[in-house]
Length: 75
Image (cartoon, rainbow, N blue to C red):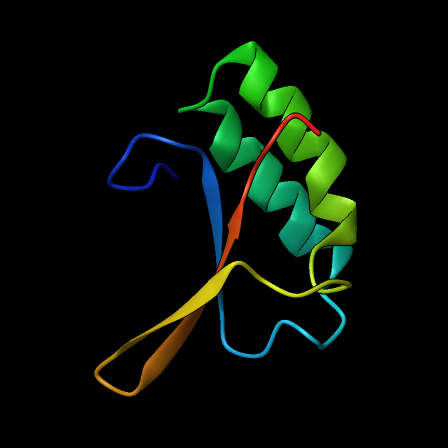
């Protein structure tokens, strides 16, 4: 999805330190393909396998539900 400033971000619910099932990662890439440019989608494809292995950029709590946010960059 896009942040309020227009940059591509990935939101995950709950604790990202757990193993993310491959089917979930595949679904995320498919959903991203609907809204991201080709260059951004390449970044997503590179970033998705490493989600949960490093610290997130920040967390958001809404009504007791936690979302973990990863900013996507071309690095």
